[in-house]
Amino acid sequence: MGAGMHGGFGSTKGATHVVAADSTLVGNGRGFELKKASEIVKKEPGFTDVAVHGSPNSISFMIRDGDREREITLNHRNLAKFLKSDKGYSGGKIRLLSCKTGSESGSFAQNLANKMGVVVRAPSDTLFIYPNGRMVIGPDARHNTGKWIDYYPQGKKR
Image (cartoon, rainbow, N blue to C red; front, side, top):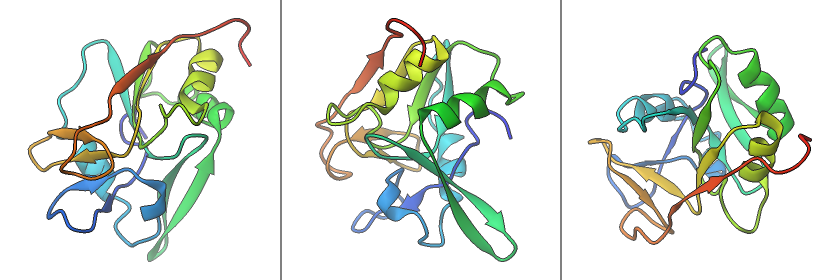
């Protein structure tokens, strides 16, 4: 599985054809929409996109298990190990297409930056992706009140 192909998206209520990488949407039967959405966003030069469901302190992604989808939850250490063994990731900066992983109430993005030894860019709130690739960070798909935050490695890798 290549970088940027690590997850699934769920549909958001009240916003036609907009997807969000919110962990509360995992298991709604639409997990693989994140993979599709990650392919339409504008790439950030110098960054590898990792598209997964997210929260301030963990991420999750969907895998197919026969006829159904199953959620796998990872902490920053698990994701770092996964990325380091992934042929699609050749090192360098990471952009998490993953809700709230850059939230100040959590530590996921900072811990990942520390563990990987690279800059990690993450959204401060829920990340919504429109069919044209436009991204909105905020409490809903209509209010772009959030931001991308860059986390730099600090001190000893954990």
